[in-house]
Length: 156
Image (cartoon, rainbow, N blue to C red):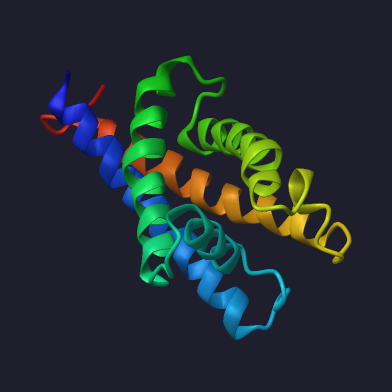
């Protein structure tokens, strides 16, 4: 395994996770979709699965681990084969795939239906989750592109 490429993937994932966190903080501050709280839903699911109350830090930490390590690593491994010539385009493509997977797996697991369609809030959660994932993935793509574009002071 290429340690240099792996740490760059994780670092880029951390950048994406930080951008995602800033968007979620803005969502809270601006009162955007205040009743749409996917982290609270994840916490409730985890509580059901483990049979005890789960500290609110756990869903947040899982999100950071998933975004920084798991998705960052997958993005780094798939970077060369993703369509697009720039980190932005590769991030958009990757993010759209993650959004589709999230809409078809994560939200139904939380009892919110495909793409959070059963929240009673119309299409707004679906659009917001797309923006949320693209904020993460475009930042991830740009950061990874920057981290991997220089070697020994020269462009590769």
